[in-house]
Amino acid sequence: MQKYIDLRNNLDLEKLKEPASIIRDGGIVIFPTETVYGIGTNGFNEESIRKIYEIKKRDFSKPISLLVSNMEMVKMVAEDISDLEYALMEKFWPGPFTIILKKKKDVPDILTANGDTVGIRMPSGEIAKKIIEYAGVPIATPSANISGKPSGTNIDNIIKDFDGKVDCIIDSGESKLGIASTIVKVINNVPHILREGSITKKQI
Image (cartoon, rainbow, N blue to C red):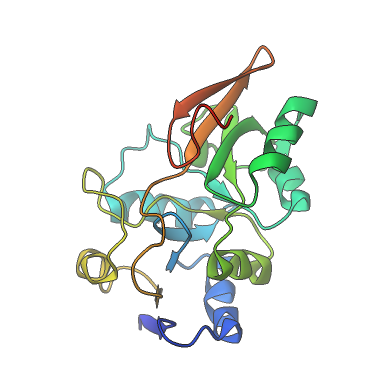
């Protein structure tokens, strides 16, 4: 049965232990980040990542990024990290900034569309940070919307789209930023913006 957790008026972080456990065990949870709502599962669980693609009607050629809560988690999924990549993470994390890094072999190929890199972000939203921390694993998290529709910022629309298809929905009202994260990849020691979000080219 799908669980609903209302945190709109009372931010009780203890309530996040159950959805974090659901994620760790390969379940699927919709939760808020500071950018938009995400639909997440255990980033090492190939079967549950496949379910997210199917629920979202997302093309398998589109990679999914991972959310982390600390640098130790980054090292669980990425390798050969350069000084510049570390500097960018230090500057813009936690926040709406996704960096593309070389992935480790343990990261499922389905997550990266068979590529050798993976997008990683450390969110600043309190709920997202705590869920990842409690789960103890990087969380595979695209935005909570059916592919082709606008990113999920309104919980009522999200519930309509995903009702009965996920294991848990966490409601904290409207998203703060409502804009997806900026995505950067370092090529030949130069940062390239693949998608500009609330962090601008000038800031980078």
